[in-house]
Length: 136
Image (cartoon, rainbow, N blue to C red; front, side, top):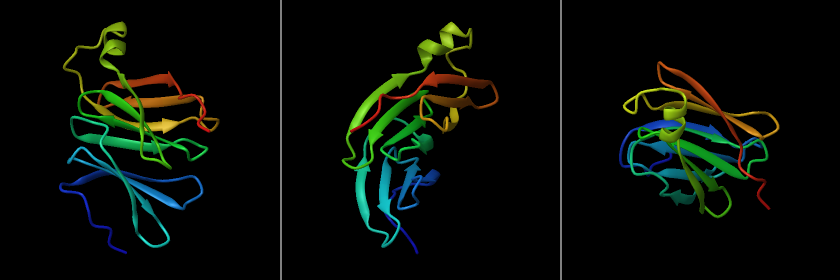
């Protein structure tokens, strides 16, 4: 199945834990959320001002976390496409004595229980963060 829609290259994609939803993230700064069964578009999420490098679903399938070139994390609600919050990791960089021009978020993963998020920093290391509050 071909799923058109992004205006630039797709850098990351993820299936929801139940396999019914696919999310794709692109250099066009959008996240697109698709129904796997028929390929229909559910939402376009505008959560970033720069290229999105990685996305992941929470274990309960209700939240998508995304990370971009400017070291911003965004949390979005899967069912509504609503942006829940943003987190600027640049402040965390300073705490870890990493230069502000350090590389971007290259990968994101939730812990199995959804309470933690691992943000891999390209060629640098990683940061472990508390996960988002549970969504209704």
